[in-house]
Image (cartoon, rainbow, N blue to C red; front, side, top):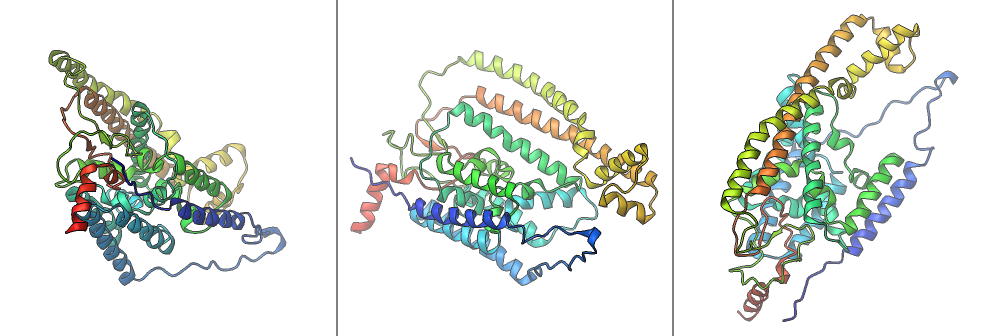
Length: 436
């Protein structure tokens, strides 16, 4: 039986993105755009011009568009089962949430705002940002990761430029997938301590959406786009911290995308259809271990998990001095301390500004000590979290769930619909619709 596989014109989108990147890289290298101030020659720095903030009405309009896009994508994925419609939604999301909204605010970055609001008493999170964080999680809980399918501009860009994806070995995919948890832990730690918003700072696609950045970030963005041509959604699969939360919600989802519209005939045509490796195969009749061996292995792992949590927490808590340097107050305190010990003063703009403020250095050092204590506590939590994740992953590998059909892995499936066209039952469904 011949299979008509739908392959949207990814080359068109890739060429357009490449033009944008080349143009942005050229602008980033233009020294005339950002001339270096010459303070010693009487140079007067002009007043900074910043775009006015979006009105509250426009921010809520973005929330409305997000909800509508999620509703449409969920309908296209679960009810209409149309890969073309999902692809069209991805194009819309890149244009609106990417280029028009310049990738901000996004659900992925809102994770940091929520973390800061939970742990910093002086941080107030806007309701619109909170909505961007919560709404995709709610949709995922009911319909699976349809946000990843076409609504997230970061995922949509990678999906649109995916031309020649190569398979990634299952074991390697599991190992690389652990980086998402590490990134999630560090993003929450630095946001909760008021140090930095790592996700926004190292967003690999912000240079594309804003049509400009420093040269290093431009190379970083170009590298990610080039990698996305051959490796399916590398950021989504191996780095996205928000994807960790979406994966957890998707495992509990009430409904989820299916490969076949009815029952699976185990024809194996969809076996390699997913470039993300998110299709679970039927389990063999004979399991690799006996029931007794599995119970014994599970018991050992359950005993070992608390040990991994303790080791992880103790290890990361010892990194408090190193990690706290990301906080501007701690960084300034170290510079002031160095100047005091070397007998110099005002070696940087930051230290000169601090000394001119008249604040005692002891006050700064005391504040830096409090921040380092927070990092010590945060290090315990971060290390314990990573130890727990590693233990749960090992337990998951020791538990064998029986299945007689090919079905999407709920945690890993992005609901992109690429597998639809490989199922003969789907072709029959479409044929019946045409004749109806």
